[in-house]
Image 1 (cartoon, rainbow, N blue to C red):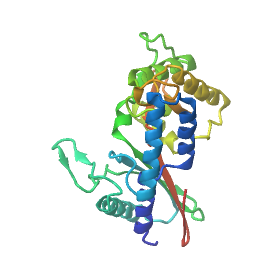
Image 2 (image 1 turned 120 degrees about the vertical axis):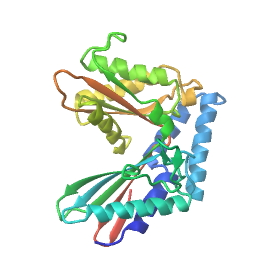
Image 3 (image 1 turned 45 degrees about the vertical axis):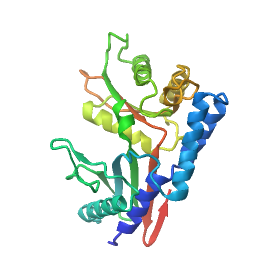
Image 4 (image 1 turned 135 degrees about the horizontal axis):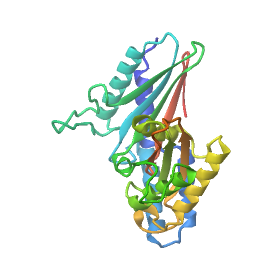
Length: 291
C-alpha cells in the first residue's frame, strides 16, 4: 500500500481553493438573473471574482475552511488505519501550507489545536469497503460553519406550520428553514434534505447528498419533482444573495429518503453555502486522478 499523503494534500488544496466547475456555472447563471447594479448582482460579481482569485493564487476560497468530511471507498485488503493516518498527516501539512486555516477548536476547553486535528472526530472520516479490484476513491467536502448554523431538523407532524407526515409537510418545513435563514449561511447555496431515519442518520444523509454534482437530480421521479419545486419556490421568496434581495436564494436542492420507525418522521435540512467545496480523488495502481 503506497503512501498517498502528498496526493491527499493536493486533494485538500483543490477542494479548499478551486470551486468545482458545475458550481461556478450555477453561480454565473444566478448572476445573469439578477438586475445589473443591484446589491444581489454586486454580491454575485464579488463571489465570482473571489473564486477566480482563490484558484489563481491557491488560497482558501473562504476564511472558514470548514469541517473536513472525508468519505473513503477503499478496496478490500487496504488498511483503514494507515489511510486514516495519511489523511491526518495530509491535513496537518495542508494547514501548515495555508491551504486550510486552523479551525479545530476544543469545545470543552476552548483551545484551538492549531493543525486542524482534534482527536478522532476532526477531520471526520467515513470508511466503506469495496471489491478488491475497485479503485480507491476519496471524496472530500469542506462544510463551512456559517451554513451549518442555519441547518434545521423537524419532527412531523408540525402543528405550528400545518405540516403533516407527507411530502406536502416536507415542502412546508423545508421552505420554513429557508425563510428563517434569511440569507444567513452565505446564500445562494444548496439545500440538502433527508426524509426519515432517526435524528442522527437523517442529519448524516442530508449532508451526504452534497457529494453529488449540481446536475445530478434524484433518480426517484417524485423526489426529482420536489427538488425542482423547492428550488423554484425558495427563489420566489426574494431573499437573494446574502439576504440582499433578488432571485437567487438557492442554487439547487438535493433530497434523499430513508426508512423510519412508525413513531418518528424526521426531516433534516442541511444547507451548503455558495462555497460548495467538494472534490474527489481516484487511485488505480500508480495512477491518481482528481475530479
